[in-house]
Image (tube, rainbow, N blue to C red; front, side, top):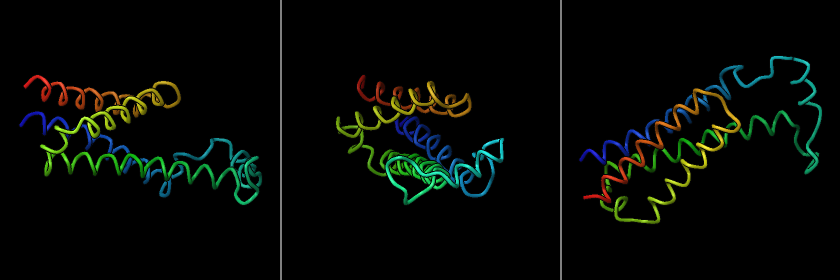
Amino acid sequence: MIEILLMALSAGIVLLLGLVHLFYTFASNKFSPREHDLRTYMERVSPVITRETSMWKAWVGFNASHSMAGILFGLIYGYLAFYHSELLFQSAFLLLTGGLMLVGLFILAWRYWFRIPLAGISLSLALYLSSVIMVLMS
């Protein structure tokens, strides 16, 4: 039973980070550059791949899709932990996929983000691994 709770807490942390990130993307200026001129320039210039968007629109879209990925992870792994724990804990594919996702997020947070998401992802990864280890040892 404790492994279910640990897995759900792991998923809940990523869900919360994703929801806060989505809120910050659309309902705050948290991801705006401190230099207003930079945002103006990002709104005017397009990336090399296409002229159909601006760097600013791409920035907002990347932040939104990043948020949605965290929300999806949190919802799916939380749901599986509570309602289909046998399926989750007996599936090497699901356990490996979730673990690799969290390891990938940890590496990104460590390399590119800042301490709050790094702390959240680190805690989520620790809870996830603890849950999996408990299942494997039982």
